[in-house]
Amino acid sequence: MGHIYDIVFSPGSGLSHVFLSTHGKFGMNTEAGGSRKCKAVFLDRDGVINRKLPENNYVKSYQEFELLPGVRTAMSIFSRLGYLLVVVTNQRGIARGLMDEDSLNCVHDYMKRQLLEHGIVLDGVYHCPHDRDEGCNCRKPQPGMILEACRHFDIDLDQSYLVGDSDSDMAAALNAGVRAIRISTNNDVNAYLTFQSLLDFAHHLQEVERQLDKTSHGDSNEQSRRSE
Ligand SMILES: [Mg+2]
Ligand SMILES: [Zn+2]
Image 1: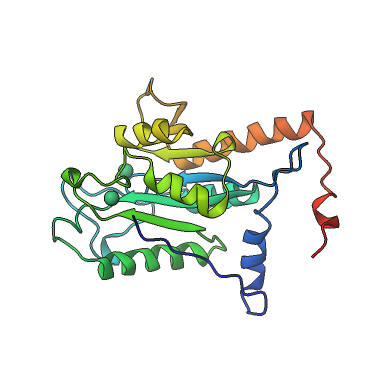
Image 2 (image 1 turned 135 degrees about the horizontal axis):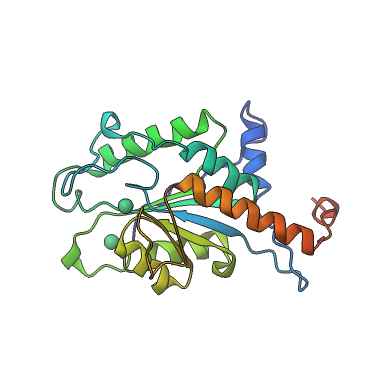
């Protein structure tokens, strides 16, 4: 199974405001039945968060990692709307010996730092290091990484989305049972919705949530009354 990176809450540290804002995402989806499951935006990495390299090239060092325009704004919007941010990425360059776990960790540390500078905390980063023929259950289109995150964070897939730029992302979403958002300039009939960029989807989701808010004035005071 892929590697998981966890954020540890440290309210006493100088970054407490960042971590507390993440903490606020947990248990925001209070339903009538009292369920407190989380909602999440699952994010493919290459082509969604950072610029994709040409076919069969892998981001092996942070110098090759370039955030796409609007990604930070988009992630801030998702966070503000109460969504966990969970990256799920296939990295078969590891199986092919083109990079190792350490260099991938360096790339991901760089990604997290670049986002944290803007107050964005990734809740989880999962990767599959296996090759196509290894028969693992984490490499997309398999749903393993999504399902593991679901168990770890108690995520409600019905309230969540997976954003990707490839057919295997769409298939993984289908296999996991979560709505698939395709980032593409062409409409994808297999996707729930298609957008040209992550930011376009974030603006759409913002509008959807605004409409939901209007129709259901949930008891927003409820969670502040929760006992500590
Ligand atoms: Mg991709
Ligand atoms: Zn795998």
